[in-house]
Image (cartoon, rainbow, N blue to C red; front, side):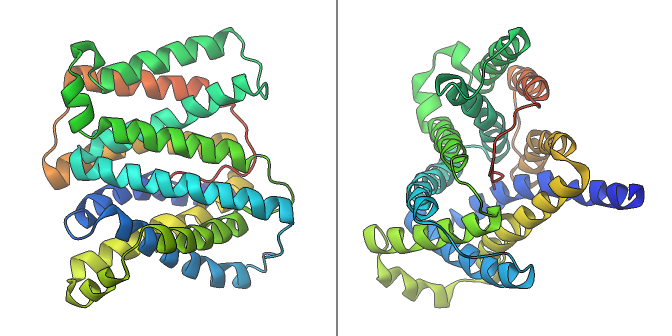
Length: 299
């Protein structure tokens, strides 16, 4: 058992790395396609790759009417999340953007849980929230009061992406007696059908024949590897090493994101951004006891 936990811990190091690397892939995809296209392709490939996994793992696909209706809302949340995250990657820095989304999601979730009375904060929680908000302020350069930089730099889209994913997470917590991969399948299938009919131009399919291998590698990575495979690995880790240790690995994501942004795009961060990231990560460590059902990892 100890050997199994040790092996799983090593594998779990891949999770934050893949999450961070998906931001790099999203940036490369922004050179090829619009947010309408990336949302449709990502939903389709994620649903398609989840189906054989459900069959192989013998996970029930049966879904109650209540859970199905919640999945419809989740699909809309994820459509907005994917769009805003991709728009942020088009306009902003990969490393800082991915780090910002990662640290903001649990902060937003916890605030929503307070307002919905699902959680009663104690002193350390309030201190963590203050620390987290201060850290995010430094990451966003709000102290410079440069509204144009905040909006045009993509940060506003990253904030919206984090907010909609937090809403997704809280809504998913109301689902009962359903596996997270089953949720992933139905949400991605519904998201594909909704966005295909509401926003997608089918003429864009004609462009796929002229796409090079860089496009195909990156669309496969964000949809199948970072979407389906790493979700399965994460929840396998939850069962073997527990939620607290699994959450601890996710805290590494901002550091991987900053490093990958520097390696692939030569991005640099200011000393204030770095201090902000450290403060926000410390807030996440304090809030690491946060427990919420059916929380799908951001990817």
